[in-house]
Image (tube, rainbow, N blue to C red; front, top):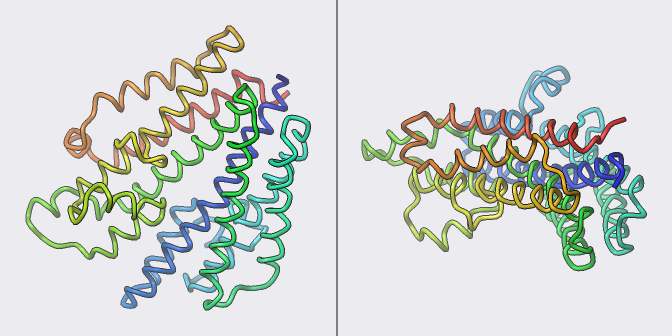
Length: 313
């Protein structure tokens, strides 16, 4: 496969995942702003920080009002990480690799782009926000459904999974990092009670609330939440799960192409590092330090994949 085609598939699914992740972040911010009216500004600020858009936002606005944040993260095309910017970039990449996609996948991407563009053509009223966010998530799910239901499990599929897993891993890690002060183990050790809304916000930001409840019932503690989001191999947005998908997909490519590159060694090393840890050893090491190192690893692996498979040039 040409490197340009591989890169188009990879970035197509990174941007699709980014679009959905942004919608989920906004939804989490909206929920906590409604339930914790004493300091909604701090929560919206953390949403922008998690999205990695603080510098661009601060250049345009001097306050973190809900309407400004929602518009910036969903509709503002000057923000390269906005939902609208991401879905447009996903569609551009899909057009570039159109011949590598089934008709169903292309139509799902194109219709999603048209639908989201129409939905976001005007500023969003607060009363309409839940429905708008649901529409964005629905279009993303339709693309994934078309992909899983119609695409061959070959190198084309593998590059889509690599892009998706990298973006998910980065998103989950950033959410944990921004919220790490609520996940410090001392809170449980001294017996203090943290507001459950904070835990639910973290979990809902990565679509983990229901799954966590199924597995943990009422045991919502700093260590149980962190363990679920970092190390649980069953949850499809955990760091462990995303790293496994990366290792497997890169392994399939190595087998198909008969070549192993630096990126394969890097993801294997990261997987070994995760296997060595329990949530207790992560807290002992320092949650912030661990997550920062993970984000650095993920970004380095992504850059190495682009070099090894010659996405550019």
